[in-house]
Each structure stands twice: as C-alpha cells, then as structure tokens.
Image 1: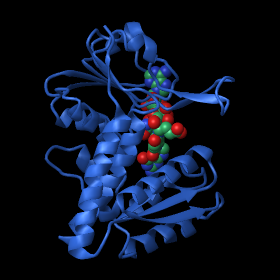
Image 2: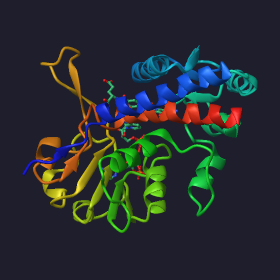
Image 3: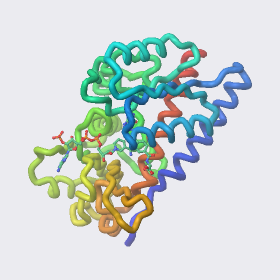
Image 4: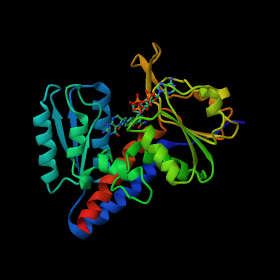
Length: 292
Ligand code: NAP
Ligand code: LUD
C-alpha cells in the first residue's frame, strides 16, 4: 500500500491564512503590523532564494519586512552593529540572520547578540538552552524543527510513547527537533555520522526525521512498515532533463519509502514551506508579546 503524502505546501498555505487573519486583526485593533528584518551576508544562491521566499511570504500575510543585504567581506564589528541597530528598531519584532555566515564571521557571537525577544529563529544560546531543559520555555522555537512537529500534529500522528529516530544532530535541525520530540514524550534515538548499524536503528522508528544532507541515503528497506517519515533534506542533484540542470531530492529515497511508510513528506513541498510558515508565526507571536 502506498503512503499518505503529507502535503507541507498545502498545510503551510493554511497556516499562512491563519496568520494573515491575525495580522489583519492586529492592524485593525492597534494600527500596527509585525515586522521582520532579514539579514543576508554574501551572495550564496540558496540563501538568496530562501530569503526572497521569506520576504514574499511576509508580504502575503501583511508582515512588514526590512532587508539588509550585506557584502560577503563585511567585518564582524559592522555585522554586529547591524544586529544591534535592529534590536533597537521599534518596528522590527523579529531578526533573521540567514545561515551559513562567511567563514571569517563568528556565528555564535552574532546569534548571541540578537535580542532574546526578537530571536525568531530561536538560535540564541539562551533559547536553545531553555529548549533543552525541562519546564523552561524558550521565547522562540527554531522554525524547521517546529515545522516538523506541526506537520505531525496536523496529520494526526501521535508522538507520545512512540519510537522516534532523528538522523542528524545539527544546531539548526537535528538537535532542536530531537528536544521537541522528547518534550512530547517520544522515546528518542539520535543518529549521526559515527553511528554504527544505522539501517538497523532506523528500522525501529515509528517516526523518522531525516536531516543529514545526503541525497536519498535512507532506503526503502530501512523503513519500518507503517512508519511516518519526515524528510528535512534539501539536496540539489544534477539532472540534465530539468530546466535548471538540477532537481531537489530529500535524504530519503522517496519512491521506495512511500511503499513502506504510512505517511511521508515529499521534497520539495514538505518541510521547506513549513520552515517559512513557522518564521511568520514566530514573528507574529513576538509582535503580540510586545503589544501585550
Ligand atoms: P548539517 O549541519 O550538515 O548536519 C548534518 C548532520 O547529519 C550531522 O549531524 C552529521 O553528523 C549527520 N550526518 C552526515 N552524514 C551522515 C551519515 N552518512 N550518516 C549519519 N549521519 C550523517 O546539516 P543541517 O543543516 O542539519 O541540514 C540537513 C539537511 O536538511 C540538508 O539537506 C539541508 O539542506 C536540509 N535543511 C532543510 C531545511 C528545510 O527547511 N527544509 C532547513 C534546514 C536544513 P555529525 O554531527 O557526526 O557530523
Ligand atoms: N538560516 C535557515 N539557513 C538554511 N524549500 C532555511 C530553508 C525554505 N537563520 C537561518 O530557511 O531557517 C533558517 N534560518 N534555513 N532553509 C534552510 C536553512 C537558515 C530550506 C528550504 C526552504 C527554507 C523551502 O521553502 C522549498 C520546498 O522544500 O518545497 C523548495 C525551494 C526551492 O528551491 O525550490
């Protein structure tokens, strides 16, 4: 039997509709809308694409966006100054510093400089620390991990008590999504590049979150029959038949996995649009907190 396809694109569109209604209400009641500042350093094509999509999504729901496109050779001090100015800017409720930053920039120092109340990516060490502890609420939860949980919830997938396996332990996806699953009472296994017998461990998963950045690494016969698969991977692979010369694939061999899983996210159209929807949600929530 073929798996249910979890349509992240459609779910994200529903969420953007919910956000737009709340932004409209805020505008009516307070004559104010939420504001997001985007900080893009350098000219990486993928980062440019994602930031453009984020600004377009802001416009669609009525969130104001403030662009800061900065040269790749900007100094640490100048970038820090941009962040500090945005911290003080009254119309900015959220600050997004798109990652990765150039090698000469100290990422930790930049992310730590973002005001806790404007940290809509949830990457400030204090927010990550709170996310990782019991009963310590972070002000914001990172967007991609939050989007993964939202996809499970809106697809009616039970998390509590189930075996969850997370592939990857990065600061932006693997680690925070694992913490969220733990808070929701999953029984958790985290795998990484030194994990032994990976296929065997993946076969235990009722819920599999793949975030390794290896095209189609997870094969159909690694999936437990009936498992739910959330594929975070976004990998460009050469494809002469495609208009751009490449196509996007996930970390999971989709065609094989869909024959075994009960539900699975596609790439594109799965987690990606949810990352952007969660950024809008966090920006709106930040603005609401400021007004209250
Ligand atoms: P990352 O920082 O490169 O982390 C990759 C993780 O996977 C690391 O923990 C690494 O282990 C582990 N890993 C790598 N090769 C492995 C292997 N052969 N077996 C087991 N584990 C392995 O990547 P990331 O930023 O988390 O991103 C992961 C993927 O998600 C990428 O394709 C990225 O483009 C995509 N992504 C998508 C979204 C979205 O919104 N859809 C958002 C963010 C990222 P070690 O820790 O041992 O090195
Ligand atoms: N840095 C992110 N760096 C990279 N895909 C994203 C992403 C949308 N500070 C900071 O936005 O949250 C972040 N905060 N990230 N990412 C990756 C990561 C960051 C990835 C994919 C998409 C954001 C997305 O919308 C579409 C999809 O999967 O359907 C396809 C887009 C396309 O190129 O066609």
